[in-house]
Structures are given as C-alpha cells and as structure tokens.
Image 1 (spheres, rainbow, N blue to C red):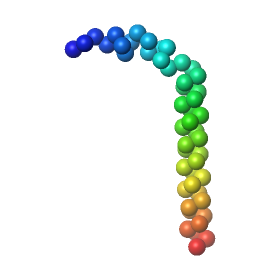
Image 2 (cartoon, rainbow, N blue to C red):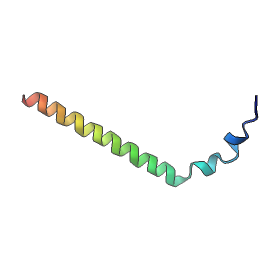
Image 3 (tube, helix red, strand yellow):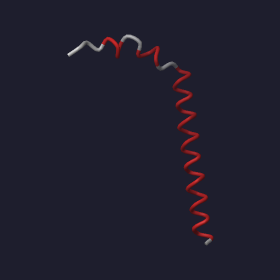
Image 4 (tube, helix red, strand yellow):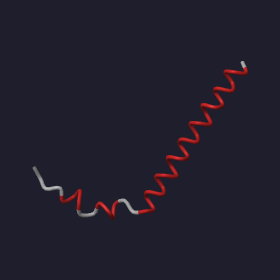
Length: 48
C-alpha cells in the first residue's frame, strides 16, 4: 500500500475557505432552484 502523502500534504491548501463558500453557495442555489421547480409543479398540478 502506498503512503497517503498526496492525501495529507496539501489537504488544507486544496480546500481553502473560498472553495467552501463557493460550494455552499452552489448547493444553496441548486436546492433553491429545485424547491422552486417542485413548488411550480405542485401549484400547476393543484390548479389543473
């Protein structure tokens, strides 16, 4: 088994705070988009 040097040397440098914030914003955007689409479909189905 190879040593996990690649996994431990720059684990903190690969994921800086900016990347975490970008990931958080992306997940919030995707969840909000999906919620909006589901709400529109629900309203259309109820109105029909």
